[in-house]
Length: 304
Image (cartoon, rainbow, N blue to C red; front, side, top):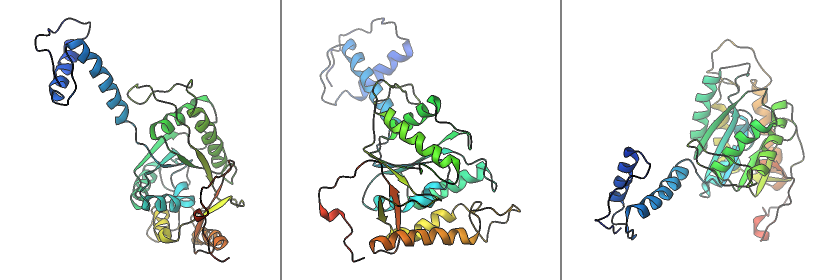
């Protein structure tokens, strides 16, 4: 970068600390190849430079983002798909809406530790929790705007979302909230800022695929997860407070999901989905948007 060394630092209504920041920035990029002739031009350049990097610091472009009502929902329903996509070089992440603090077993703090362990097993690029109220979050403007911020932060091409109806009312409510937020995130006039107060750009995912949770619904398509199925089970078992574990010693009541039979049912469900396409294990998804393909090679072509 070439500067006019005769240029003087004039008073410009900014504080001295900020002027020192501009000077430090000038020195840091002096040899970057840009030509700037005076301090005013540099101030303009540096403001744009600083805004860009402040925004990029809080943005991670993901290929696939799974959004769930509770920590452990993703592990149960779509972790295999995430891990398979990771093997293909995709960036993957999870946003949990709540901390699962109303769960009968364990605590929110323990659930957080379990979510971290499960994220490591799944090799997530990012996982965050929006700390909405478990059991009481609503499909309203406040919650939609909070989720819009996350969608714009991660800019996913595909969102894996909660079921639109399920045994647990949070699941269906989350599914509808996610659909609304994904649409609103694409509207330029819905304004949002990141954690630094930087204006976010609009972004709409190309597809929303709803994973199938407790209640069975015929899937629109299934995804072969056979190569990563054992790791999927490991990610579920990371939540030892929630699911059957011989090592979890807390004196707490048995629940619908903490019995050995529940884990057996999860394995059976994935075997059933796999059988549909002639593989050992698969995960099922429902889409309200027509899926388009450009090659018949996209299909699993096995005898069934």
